[in-house]
Length: 286
Image 1 (tube, rainbow, N blue to C red):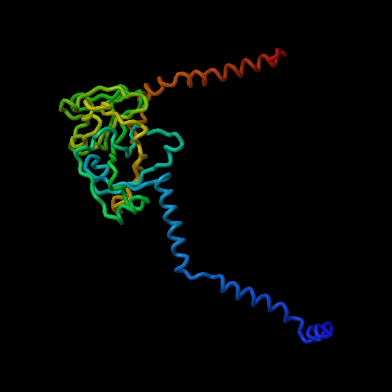
Image 2: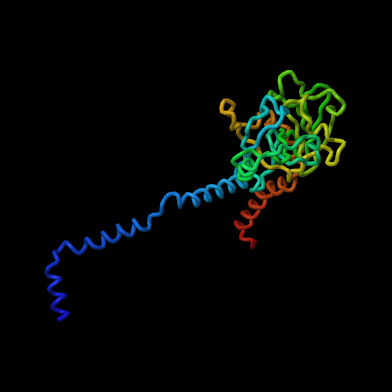
């Protein structure tokens, strides 16, 4: 009986009717599985926040310029983007770079710390707003470990005996300040930096902290990253390249002297290879 009923039903069905059932079933399942946008919105926001936090931690972060010490390169209120990725690969700041760094020793002890509201704090934490409550500074690197930096009279600044041509210095300023602490000659210790503001007569930089712990030098470990772009306001958008004066010949004298082993190895490699080649030709065992 059951076999006859099944056979009769199968004969009534047309040849193209059966494939339609699974199609309708898939469409109905898709409609059931599709979630409303408002249910997916929290997930999208969560992913966006995680990505923003990762970018701030490992790639770039926005910082606000709090003073005029870097005029005219940077103006108070400018927003800069800081490259935080490069230091993760072991690169250290070089001469001429504009860097953001943590206060190395109470340089900002007399500066008030702004108190952001809750929204500003959250946006700053994830990197969507400039950091507001961290005591960071921004200056230009003039000397690195091993360099001798000096200022006499009104300038120019000299690095390893080479005078710097500094077109970025604030118009009307002299490269060196003529007050007692503005006249100096220092040798930068390994792992430290000597930094100065572009507004030389309005910058409490390394020169003015020589009699404090750290002697005005900034530890490389305090560096947050290199400022690479002025991102805001839009009419001031620009990059922050290393000035050509730091590429002049002879300025790397001290840096080269700190790596004699590397130079020796580089010079020895061709000699070793040449000797090995001669021994192979003569049949001598190597």
